[in-house]
Structures are given as C-alpha cells and as structure tokens.
Length: 138
Image (cartoon, rainbow, N blue to C red; front, side, top):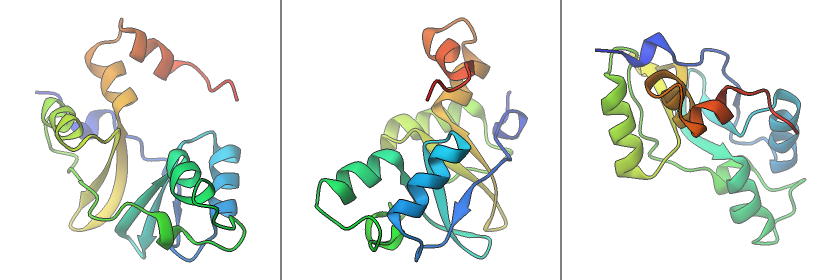
C-alpha cells in the first residue's frame, strides 16, 4: 500500500482568513501554486483556489483589494492523514469533486496532496502526470 505521506507536498502556503483576495492571488503567482490553505494557527479552516478568486470573487464583482479569503473560502474541507492509502485519497477526491486534500495530524496541517501528485505517483506515464511533473509555464 502506498500512503499519502510518501508523496504529499510539505512546502505549504497558508494564509489568514482576513487576508485579501489580491494578497492571495499575488502569493499564488509568486509561489507558482493554485491554492492557499486558510488556517487559524495550525488548524485548517478552509481552502481558496485561483478559481475561487475568479468565480466567487471577481465574477461576483467583489473588490479584490478589500474582500477577504473568509468571504470566498471553501469550508468543511475534506482532509486525510499521512498514513491513508493513496487510492483511498483519490477516491475521496472523486467523491467530493476536489483536486486537493490537506494532510493533517492531530488536527494540525502537515501537508497537502493534489490530484497531480496522485497522478505522478500512481500513473507516471499518464498525460496528467506528465503535465503535473512539468515546471509551471506562467
């Protein structure tokens, strides 16, 4: 059994719920990532993706310089542990229609596993794995 902990990302980018959409977009751009985990201390309270900023923020005509992550974040985030089976993590992603799962231990954030991580691990010859393994082009 391959576990989530064997290939999860531990380079995490977290932000506070009071941070602005503009600040989050800049962090995502500068870090070449598509999401930030919103935390209160070490606890996950939500996740915000670049798509959330676009669809829940900009498309709703929020002022990105003043609107906060708390206003658009996805709450009730599905999480896994580092000891969970990778196939079970993929099943959770499919069931809940998500592409990223925070990895927690004793309620504290320790990592993140993405659909791309799973593709690289489980099907390294797949198109998704090939795309996920490449350096960002933006």
